[in-house]
Length: 295
Ligand code: KIV
Image 1 (tube, rainbow, N blue to C red):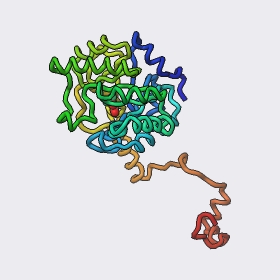
Image 2: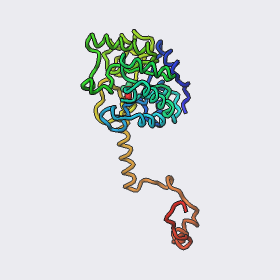
Image 3: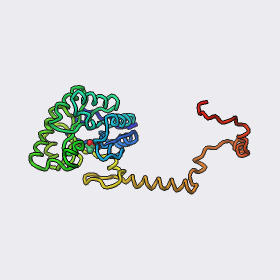
Image 4: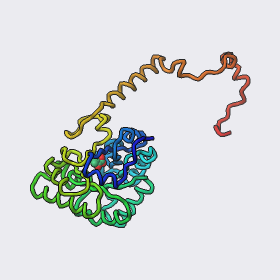
């Protein structure tokens, strides 16, 4: 259990004036507990669980039920960090009624305190409806992975003047709709700075330079748990994948050589019982073994 003070939505809002907000993704009990103990402000149960944990290519593959399972596991760690959960693709696109109902399930069944959804001016009505149901909403602009097919790939967004102006307008529209914070993903640093200046809610950057009010990274990337290459904006602070491979290799070697388990890692009985068992006494004293464990 963490010793840090609990982070709430109002606390996050107040941090527009600093200190910078920290957020990482977490998808299960141990990762949430580690993030909380490290003093991370917000845990994002991101739909990146699709790639990081389930091995899917796109975030489009995860469902509301999958997000609820991961969010509930994170919540059971009782982190001090604010739990924000991603609304997966198609959970808020069909109608605002469905969006509110699905956001409610993420809060009630998933134990999160807030939801995040992707999009700008096109999501304003949906955001308003969810906020009106007393569910805090975090926005997400820029490279929005749920739009990968519409965007034609994972590309930095807002490089052209009209696109940059549209993103600033989107951020203002989201603020007006009631979001408490906005993630800016894959946008040039100067645009992220302009958006951060343009809104009164904290911006959280990922691949958006250093001017945002906070930063978010994927748990597996920060700790070097994913195989393969990381995007340019990732900084890995450990190489846990290599350490895990080495540790498991050592374990396997010890099993094969008989070095594991040792005497200290083994349960024992009194000498007389051991002697009786070694003499085959157990067989003469034992009734017929049952086929059913419960009988
Ligand atoms: O799902 C996720 O990990 C995210 C972050 C990239 C912000 O949405």
